[in-house]
Amino acid sequence: MKTDASIEGLASLVGIEELAEYLDVPIKTLYKWRQEGTGPASVRVGRHVRYFVSDFQCSTAASSASGAW
Image (cartoon, rainbow, N blue to C red; front, side, top):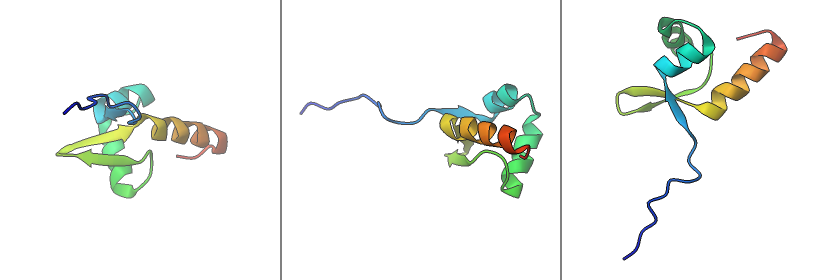
């Protein structure tokens, strides 16, 4: 039996540390946004919080256009 081990088509995920660095905000701010339901959408992978790269790129563009976030 041959299987395709490729994960092509799956969206990229980043950790909270990487996103905090990218957005230049403290990690605590991302946890606060997550608790309040604001900021980029997050998912839990096991015990880790992860963010889809496409989600926060879209959120960043939308927030800069509207002046909110």
